[in-house]
Length: 149
Image (cartoon, rainbow, N blue to C red):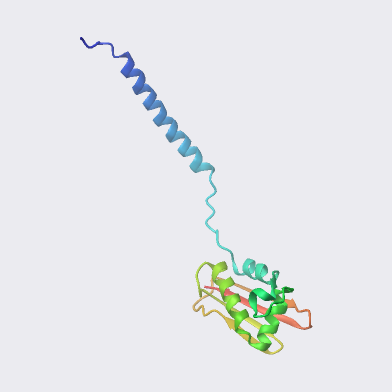
């Protein structure tokens, strides 16, 4: 058997390979241009404070009671500031750890009726800071200061 000297088949395959390679480069370039390169994907202190303070919690999730009533976050935090409830402090710590992305890289100070509670131990210069004053159901203002480090 004798090999054919016809090279048209190999040229067609090479042309197809070059075409596919060029198309891959073009589509990769188009994809890279159209993607959003959002450098600021983390939340700032204002966003985190707003999300936490606008939340409602079930008492059975935070305390030892079996009561399933929903309580607003400012009401729960104000009661915890007065009573020193450690379960609520631990729950708030878990929330802030998850929201900030770096456990302990924050400091949240809650003030209600001359009582103060601090959660977190961030130190240094804060990257983001937010102060909010929220009216509590049983009167007076809960003042929260959140600093992210």
